[in-house]
Length: 309
Image (cartoon, rainbow, N blue to C red; front, side):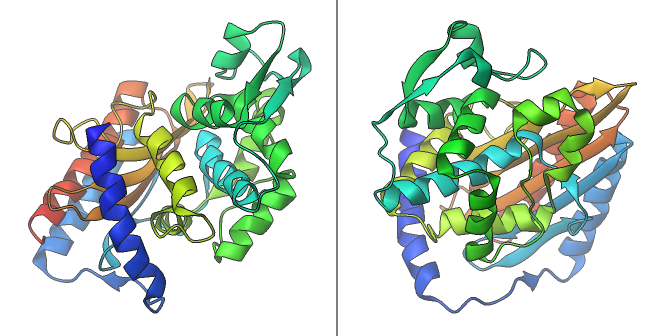
């Protein structure tokens, strides 16, 4: 929790500055260090033997640190629970939804057994949970039932997409619920994002654009407390590093895993922040290798930025 409080305090100060600054574009890294990082990223990505997309930006300066296939489309899987949660929190800020209100969840709302859902497993006959509890289940535990219920509460995928449009985020598409694409795996490719779009979403959260500071704080708290993907972005970073992140993972069919993802905000030792998105798609590699690919890329970015700040 102490690490999260440091993140929140530093984000609070920086976000106010960012919100008042002109929306300048990213400044690309130049020089030998950038070339070395690009080579290293490409070498690491080859381990996954699939499609790998990377985007990483130092938020305080908007410096583009790393980029690989950053404008290609990748299936998000549970990464999409972050924009759903952000869209829901906008409704909370508008007074249309209350965090303490109770939401009934029927057995019919549960995602199938192929999907991850602690709510389904803990309450097999249905239950009633607060909006806050649903957000925690969606972001900290990546519960598919929770995100489907939150999407419905937020107004459906159209409302979530409209929220992204209002933020100016392009190349991120949300069309289907988790219940839908666990029944038809081909649908998972319809919920896509580019790595650049994922970083744009993280930057919007960092700046709490379209969100109150209290809503931003709650989302960051649940992301920092995430129990999923400890061997991905966080895997090789120094112990105690604050990483507010959201993972996404598909099943494996015919030896191919469609999605192994992690996007998040990494707090550097000097208090600055990196927004990073790493997507591994259509990979025949095993889980250890796919997750190690993400961890090694995050560590390479960490090491490179450490030489600059």
